[in-house]
Amino acid sequence: MRIGLNFLPTLAPHEVPAAEYYADCLDLCAAADRLGFSHVKAVEHYFHPWGGYSPDPVVFLSAVAARTSRVRLVTGACVPAFSHPVKLAASLAMLDNLSGGRLDAGFGRAFLPTEFSAFGVPMEQSKERMREGVDAVVRLWSDSDFTWNGTFHRFGPLPPLLPRPVQRPHPPVYVAATVSEDSFRWAGERGYHLMIIPIVASHERLAGLLEAHREARAAHGHAERGRVHVSYHAYVAEDRGEALEEAERHFEDYKAKQLEAYASWRGVASEQYPGYEKMEAATRATTFRDLLDAGNVIVGTPADAADALQLVARRYPGAEASLHVRFGDISARAALRSVNLLGRDVLPKVADA
Image 1 (spheres, rainbow, N blue to C red):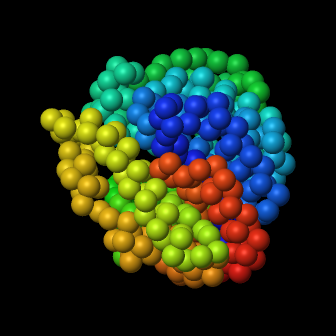
Image 2 (cartoon, one colour):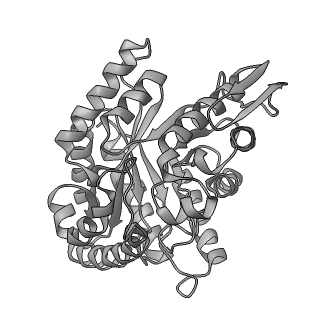
């Protein structure tokens, strides 16, 4: 099993200044690169302490590229609804060149009403804007004589995009999917890979959705089993009691900031996001112990972490785990300890899982 790091910042300026947070995270990425982690992933969010320090994953991952030589760089995820396809394709192609061909391009719909309002994009268009945007970006990377006549963007004929990505015909493409079978099947039809978050659905339900993805890939001539990233919070320490106590405390801080962002759903309902207006209440009701008992956090000693990741490998064969080691108000020092322990004592044990 391959293991990487996931960065979704959950800090406010009065807690840690942005510049300090970025510097600390780059140190974590450099350590991960030395220790054999497989990737670094960064999100795109705005305004809220939950994610707001990461408005542009391409900028952050460009800095990571300069500090590393081996880890894959994953946009997890860029939001096509908030960017013009030409701009997004060119920025990602530039990152692929700066990193020597290490980009894994991940895309998502976004789901916070605050963000859609800021960009003046109707939430009801989110699914189609994302799908059109991803397809247009892939075409821009691959085609030489290009015209696009979509619902939301029309441009061309255009000369070949410069720079072209290093990876040909284009970098691997990932799509964030949660619980919609339609999303899993669409990604499979296109030959795109997946990014999933197990805490939003049972592993039994996710197993069925992943099977739908494989079926769609096979039916459209793609390799049957695509790649899958699964994301988890992680806290590792030599002492199990300390790890559990500290992880729970920091998870409560993470959840409080998550709830502040989710509060933007109050009074909002969207056919594109069925049930999301109930997300705040569902998140409030979920406890750290619920996630621990369900195997949806990687917390404890290195041996505990290895056991938890072995379970992930059994649940999602062939998947790659993205670990969020600095969630809530975890310090840079504690996050680095988790990375060092994972790299030294856990990665070798799960390499063949």
